[in-house]
Every structure is written in C-alpha cells, then in structure tokens.
Length: 216
Image 1 (cartoon, helix red, strand yellow):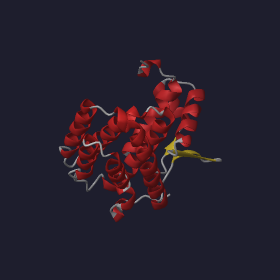
Image 2 (cartoon, one colour):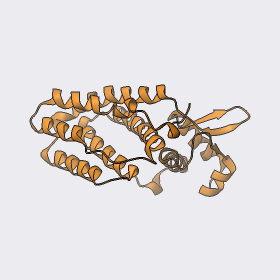
Image 3 (cartoon, one colour):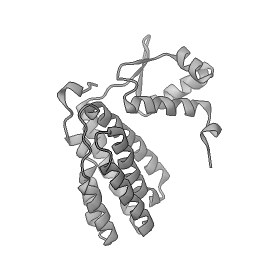
Image 4 (cartoon, one colour):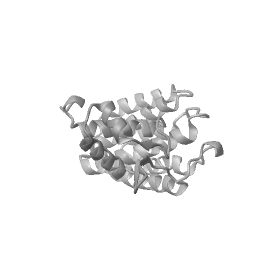
C-alpha cells in the first residue's frame, strides 16, 4: 500500500494545495508563488511546477502569461456542468458496482449517512460523510479510470459547496441516501440509479447565497 511518504513530492504538493483550494483556504484569484511553495515543502522548483500542472489539469488553478499561477474561479455554468457529469458517471459506476455490493458495504454506507446527519452546521464534516457514502457504493464497480474522474468531479462539487454555503450551512437529513440504500437492499437497481442521478445534481441546481457566489 502506498503511503504519503512514498508519493513523489509533486503529488504531495498538489494534494496539499488542492485540499486548501477545495476547503476555501485558498480563495479564487489567489496567486500561488512558486518560491514560497518550494520553500514550504523543502523542494526545488521542478516538482512545484509539476504540481501546478496537476492542479491545472483538475481545473483548480489557471496559468496566465506574465501573471503566474492563480486559483481558478468558477461560474454557475461550470457548477451545472459538473453536477450533470457526476449524475451520468455515478449512475454508470453504480450499475457496475451493484452486483458486488454486500450487506456489510451497505451497512457502512448507512453509517456514513448517519454521520452526515450529525454534522449540524459543519459543512466540511457533512461533505466528508457524503463523499464517503458515494465512494462506498461506487468503488466496487472495478473501473479505476471512471472512479478517478468521479473523484475529481466530487472534489469540484465540494469546492462549490464550501464556497456557497460555508456561512449558512445546516446539514440536511439525507432522504435520498436512505432511498438509495432501501432500493439496493431490495435489489432494485433502476430505482437506486434514478435516485442517485437526481441526488448528485442537487448542488448544481441549488443557488448559493448571493453574498457568497464566486464568478468564473
């Protein structure tokens, strides 16, 4: 099993910066200074540049001639695009995963839903529980490229969520998660897939508070 210590330094740098961007620690438009990041991680400029390329491929930063690298913004259209892509791809993954979902996996997914219910006003705790639910159900699909794409889309969704709702969040009681689990326990994959498809578009269809909207 690969540990954080075994990872190339560029991967560790990109992962750390991605977490800061997704959580809102680095706001849209913030400049990422190569020298400061190299010093922070005890690295040369080469892995820092590679980390920037990784972040740019994920849509988290933008490289601008003569202006350097900045945290990318996002528009309402991008929020909707990510939600629609997630809906299509997560349904695909669930259909392939469903035959391999054991009662134990479904029990763990139910526990993740209960953890989300307990999150209260902590949007980050809710998002972590929500993502755990989705990962548990989709991981058995056995399609690593699909799962990697879904993981990147879920990270983008988390960023939209934190940007729009950090100040006014109250964790919802997740009826959709429970409906998905009921359908899967009953072997009704079509209903589970339909509920999942609708559920993951929620963040794309729910407008953020006006004061917290971020432009592209």
